Length: 409
Image (cartoon, rainbow, N blue to C red; front, side, top):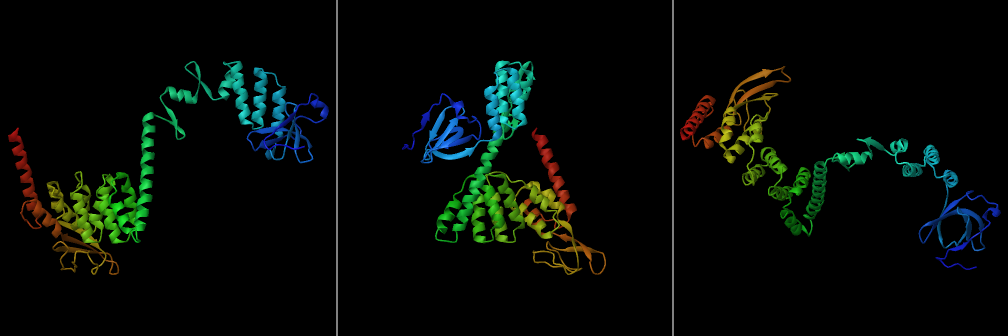
């Protein structure tokens, strides 16, 4: 007998029981190449390997080997369920009993099916309602999803949230994805800067305008050692409207060892599209490193903001600790000895603390860059390092401005 590839030959048997084979003994699932499946018990194999089986309706089905994709043995519990479900009456108690049996045998999908059938037969069945997750909410049976929806909450990312929270989370996800995409692209372009595509890559980096690129550029700056590449990335970063841009430029202007880089970053800050906070520079006036104190003063001088005057007066002379007499003070080109001058102009008295092997010396250092900033911001006045005179001048100016304001009123 020949079989066509997609032909399914069905032979109905009116006396299926006379075959002497239980409907559910050793039942298998025959997955078909054409899609779908047939479930039944193999009762014979043809001469050419075809499957002759009896399905669960009592019909005899013959399948060619070419029609069958895979034969999957059916689980014993599934067979028992099929027998039970076929024999049960369509009543609330019968479905409840079979649902309990299914739960005991971990047939979860069948549990839900029978509980739902109970509700179709008796919508007020409390046990079935609660088993399916319903709650009595203000006299109505509702699922948790329904109750939350009535409260204006929606299921998102594994929890119930307000529409506003969901919208914010979606924006965050969109931003994070855009940041990841920019990091990937710019990292690839940076890798091109050393080959024949260098000019193209530099142009693409320079043309980046999306603020979402800022975090990726900052991450690349953290690991990049080539100064030429760093300059290109910093110039691109300085054009982006992102809060992390200012933070990064401030850090570079204070802590980068290259003076040219520090001054360039200050210039970027002066040209930035929004006012720059003085706070990080003012805080740096109290840095433990005297070099940073003077760099901060130089930055405040260039920013030309009179609000920096009072903190600068406080920083004319600052106290710093050193572990021994011969320790270098910093990069300002100064050194000290008990009678030496500090990086800003002069040193005061020192205090030795500890034993001979580990001396700690406190020095009061006059900060030249602080003085220069005050001279610039005061319009040319110079009280040198006399904090008292600078403070008197500043307070008198404040009083004068206050009086003028009252007169205008």
